[in-house]
Length: 216
Image (cartoon, rainbow, N blue to C red; front, side, top):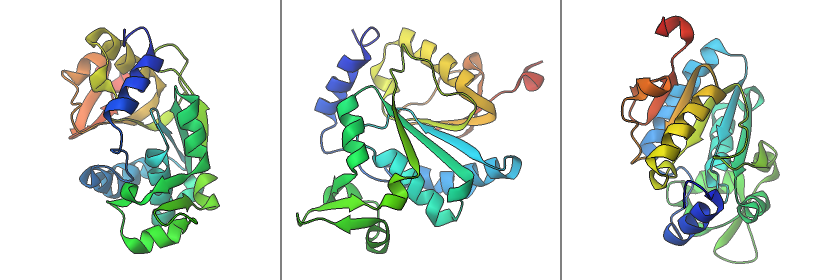
């Protein structure tokens, strides 16, 4: 069922992951992204294209946008965010979040990038962060992927797909990456034998696309 119907998958994920979404989820991985992955990509690219491929209600792509602003590279980064669920995308575009989403963000950063709403426990993300992210509806199993991405995030979703679906998606993600592009997966989603899908592991949860010249 999950292989045939990604919409059902996301309804299932919404049910089992309620109250789990948060900004900068798994902070140690975001630290690697900030200090290693993105700087290395910018050494060989004037601009980089990042795709958050299962963005749900938007915490992940907005975390990327905040990180880009904090690094001072917002003019060198394009961020695309997608989900199969239009309701999730519309919620993300609104950019309103409960304070419980901020467990990994220090107060100065919250004050810098969010505005408190009339509800005491809700904040809205500032326009300069919203404007950094382009949202699209994409069904990972059936739709064409954005091309020439330097970094793709697909976190905490693949574990719910069948093995057949995973194989299909790993190959699609690899094709959607630019040469030397990076695929960033979730905390419980190590890829077994990544070379079978054109990847090499460079850090835990980070995989680099193997270029043809390196496979010959």
